[in-house]
Image 1 (cartoon, rainbow, N blue to C red):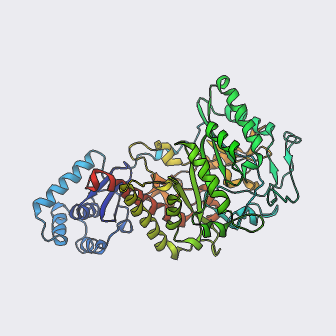
Image 2: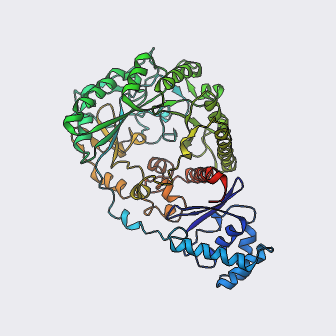
Length: 532
């Protein structure tokens, strides 16, 4: 199975199972497609996978003549490319068959058996929701629409919501965690609004979460912990104390902890900068781009914008990182469908590590994107890729998260099949110590998996997640991008389509376009942009 497309003057052929990428000329591009039509390529990914203005010509020729042997293929190719000789076509066919023999073109997908046993890997990462308080009032945050009775039926939630908080579950405290939690309720005048789940994690719960991670990590040596919220800086001392505790047990446990802080940046000060630079492997900082865009969505509790407050603090922290990991992470809605301008604005501020995520909404929400917006969204991603290539040549390059592809290595085969490890290798912990599949499911009682004292008690749910793969989802099994997205986000699938075993179709289309752009950029920067 192959995927052929044209982008920015390049003819690109992706061999789906092997991951091999071929940049070819016009004749080879069409001969490869005809070879596929003729049956020489085995599984055919369908004409919808083929881009370019000449698609109808090749498809029509193949339709008129039907599939056939090599002589028929040569005849058809020469009808499309009238100045090409039979010798030229034969040379291309020989190259195709050589690549096929080496497993680099039309290679079979032999990985399905790996998905049959599900994921039995030990735990490797926790998302610690150390605060369900937030000192901002972002319009697209799903928690701002939640109440105790509406958990799990969020009207709006951003993709990979980095500033999310959720309503608390309906169940009462367990005997095991009763008395260990520090629950806050009521209004707050200084730290911002308080939602249905107004809680801060205690140090005792944080320590127990670290112990739970160590106890369930098997032979893994490196363990990841993300401090999340709400806004984790509202519980900053506990964050520091949890890190200190983890460092103290590293030698005894034989583990090494990598910490990440995700923050809206409002409370960044010198102590935060010094500590994160010393202890945090990565820092994720929220910024939505241009001042008017950011201020329209990421508001302070009083209604004012936050751009002028957070940008100087983000700059100061990033400058102090001195090459250590960070990401400036934004969310775009239909109000800034021209999001490329927001990415470029952040690059113009001097930030080099950028991410911009499309908001994920229920159908009809004014923030979200109907399918009619896909052509414009595709144009935005393409123009961003072109501008990134231009800036790279000028020595002003930057990284865009979705355009990072490690084509030489990348994730292992199992990761490509099964995805991020949600509910199996990765769990989220609430301030009360409850366990959820990931931060996106926090507060939804249907996805409560247990707690850090008793461990996983909902094994049926864990097994359901473990059984999800690109082969269990019918939409994925025939998709050319399946080894890049690994089946997509289970939370998006559930909240948009009703099942973790389904897919979020609009998200799929955007993901495929991003992969096409990322591969094109690799081609453009390989061998000075010449065909590989």
